Length: 523
Image (cartoon, rainbow, N blue to C red; front, side, top):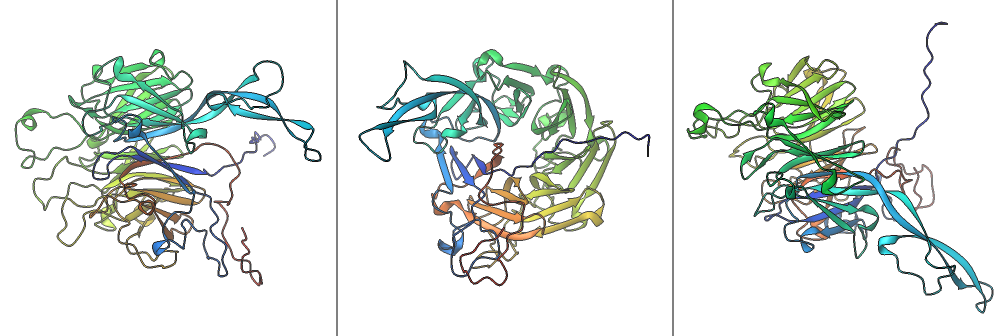
């Protein structure tokens, strides 16, 4: 031990996110209502306190409506009718200009006299004070601020090409600052992106499909230069025509990995009826070196198992990537053939060749058809979406969250929670059968949040939160109690701002034992 190398890590603090943004997609029609939800509320003080950290206002119908001010909304379609039907996005930091103004206010002890105060205001929304003091214009300074980026996909009329970004500081203001970048002005085929991600100084748009079919042009732009001058394009199909139709992407080290979803039709597939000749999805993972913006290899998971294809996303834990099963074939050839997959693929990213897989349906036949996922501690959580093409007994949409212990990648390491059957940690506590058909999820603190889409009967606005440590403690926040059109979202995006929250989302919420104060909160 005396000759071993001592490695000392710098201290760091993990900040839970204060906000999650829900990406608008379809609520019966394509819509552009971006919802921002505050995650760190303590709840209302009352004589009989809750036993859990509350996510909703217990005084609303069924105790699941939002608090006043908990949810803010921007309807992007009021800015431009084409701004709707988004599929994903990300948050990132860039510079913004502020002004440092000094101004006069009446003195507290004698209003006849004035004292000097100062403020820092965003230049884009700055209005000089009527008592502005100093010489000329106030000094300017730059600060890093957070922007929310939204990815264009299909708005009901056209496949879209305009990337939107919102200055997060202004999200709740009457005049939010929204900018656009039209990548289609450089190349008309740059439209119909299914996902996005950021890495370093760049934002990336992941190609899926447009009116010409599946496409494979990966786009990136500089976050600090949100103009067409910073746009670069990597045409993946110029290398291999199969490099198209990706669902999402993730990064590990210097590389980005394109998650396979759809593949181009070949041979008889081009002419035969798809319901009689089901088309398998793609299993071809494409790796891109982000330092050179060049393709650095590929791996066909379907070569390991024919059903390792049609993934909705991937999650990384240590050096492994877990590919989330969604739809193994494009269409079933009958109602009896279930196109939704439960086969999780695991790839060792150190060699980008070692592949293992796990069939979740061996645990429960409903553990299939997931829409993205997330990691917490050593676990991977898969977000339930749809488990069958048709179910005569009820909705085909699923509410079964699968949890995989990555330290035991076997059936012994799999458990699941049926959100539709779980008693809620709210008043009243009855189970909510609407908690199904989600589109992605996020983690803040020890809580997982599931993004509502379609529950089998209606497009949903019910955000579900669970305690990931307990894999239980289900709570619901019904956005439709604020606005009946707040439903049908495509994904969730967390704020990255490091800030102290009102409630510690990592700690255990407790009622202090023996207290005589009915309004006392303890964290």
